[in-house]
Length: 491
Image (cartoon, rainbow, N blue to C red; front, side, top):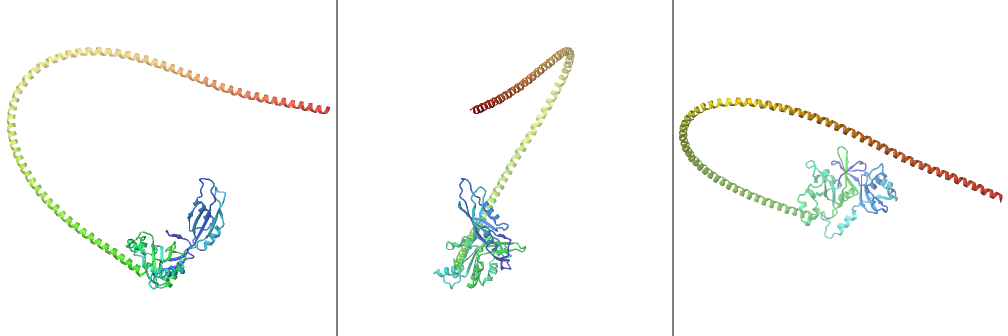
């Protein structure tokens, strides 16, 4: 139930200047489009295309709203709404009895249009309802025609400055008391317990606090005249709001007299008792939760004390373990000190033996140096002789290496000449092959030309034969005609 932007405020009547609310007549018309019989399988008629045709038929005027309410193979029924009541008859005259031509269909679509009749209760309806109800007493408020039920009121338009997103009973009373003194009002979505009422009050199950942009309201007047005036004023009307900037918007509302005795003393008392029962249940639930919370806190405190006791025990055990560890550490230190003293004694003895061994090694090294000098002189003499012999062998190897390099260079030159001869031979072969291919291609082209010329000559010969035959036939026909004319003249 969305609000609609309104561009025409000429027919509006003031409802509340303080809230900038107005009443505007509902301008609706019904459009019935008869569809032709579809003879080709798979072909269908687009509702959107038909809708666009209807919009073009009333141009330059426009529908405020146009929607499909029923569609079948035989017809499409639309509901349209205009910005002003005066436009309805104009739209009807432009549409009623006319036809629509759609591409792909030979038969036109017939259009019927008429102003929609709005369903609204009359004084006879509410008087009959309350008169025929045996369990109602018209002396009691709410059990007589005094309460108006309105559905679809925008929350934002009936909100006060303190709660901009929530409707206010004070604002509702301010707006609708212009028709008469109001005894009481009820806005179900303002009651947070309404959605939880028992099945005996199941008519309130659809109300949810803060879940909609629109709300329902019950307005009970003190006098029948106020109720009657309100019903008369709201008949066939929708609600309009004009902002400070001058932009107007409308909302379709549903108005009916209260058929449930919603604001009767009995029902109000029943709701109050049910609400109190729910409040008591909530309080009991809160007390239960509080007790559970206290029990949980006590349990947590005990657990905390137990954890502290365990921590203290763990700390005592830790300190005992540290003490034992220190004792073991001191014992290990004593053993380490004794081992260190033993190692020092052994090290002194080892160093003494090491000094004696060093003296013996010095004596042996002196003897080894004398022998080494003598061996070195002999090795130098042998090395000089070996070096001279090596130089002679190296010269021989170098001479042989130069000879091998010369032979390799000659082989390389011979290979290069052979490679050039082979490349030249391949080049000549490639050139001969290309010439042969070119000759074959020319031969094919010449043969194709000869064949084409032969075909042309045969065609030309056939044409000459045909012309010659035609001439012979014409000559024979002329001779025959001449002979026949001579014979006829002789007779």
